[in-house]
Image (cartoon, rainbow, N blue to C red; front, side):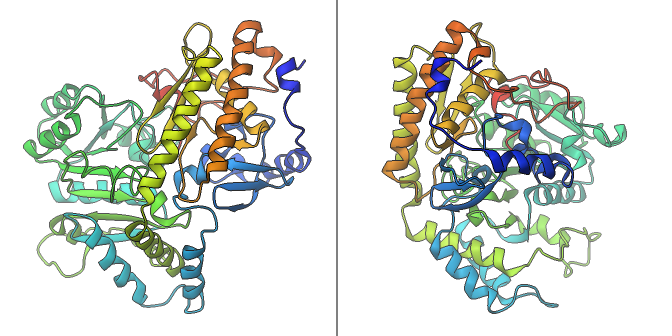
Length: 469
């Protein structure tokens, strides 16, 4: 039975969402095309699908309006239906989208992107991040003649391909022989990477890491990882899929003093359009070319839609917007305002010890704990339910877009204040009085029936946010 705070939620109809859910799982496995968008990642009282978006807001298929805090898993950096990007795409549509030879825009965008990334000499475009990170791994193996891959096991996601997904509990369908080629270390303890190199001398082809995660690495840890890779002859890869165009310009690696051999890009570089990229040193990338005649040729990224022109046009327009407008400054201002409001609200409701707000210059992640101080999917679900009920599409984190307004920020903070009051009541009176339906479940779980956070996730903060692919 609903408690008094829940009854105070504004009335929202999810009638069409209920019908949508009933049908979609009969047609699409998982009900979506990335598991982070699945029904098991959201409260029962939430939209099943989005009908449209404009700037920092979206509308569901029942007509409910929300401030959007997640922005297509962070892919929308400027805003939904952002006109300068749409205009570039419309112009390209009139010219055609896919040809038998490369489109002119492929070279144009390659030239502009490489000019924006220090040290980048070559680029390959693709449509999704997993293709790009897997291409980086393949190049590294060919370049070094080695077979092992090392990456932080306390980071959330690198690829749905076997080399990464086989390291998670979702290893069904991945041969043990493939899983044995992937090694994990703890990014908060650089000595664990050094131990891998000692335990597997001359076998590690590459180290791939994200430059920033909620599990903050000690100062200099990333540079130490790069130094270890260089010392042991491994390729050093930075995955900027989440941080690119958000955590710094053009990404986070320059801010950390890194000089990676290869860099993977995606999400924010297309403002929601499907465009990803791999940049890197010519000596490595050219193994996938057709002009070098010394080394065996790497069959790199070869996809029908890799040069599809609308994604390239969108990417080109986004790049130009970031270069001509102070997008990152606007992002930073929004994060600071929302973080300050959230922390104040949590303190006022006496839930700061149970609802942690972790903010960087570009992102906010909330970590929800139960009364015993343990990471709690149920309390995270409750927070999402209360925020959604107050017109804020919240998935545990806030990523800004350029077109988020002061009104959007005020609504987020106001909704969070009310949600914190419910959180406090649930701590005092019991979750069952306030949460409607089942708690969300971790993306990475061996069986669909699993409801607990996987013990294979060693970082207590990552256990809350892991699975945002």
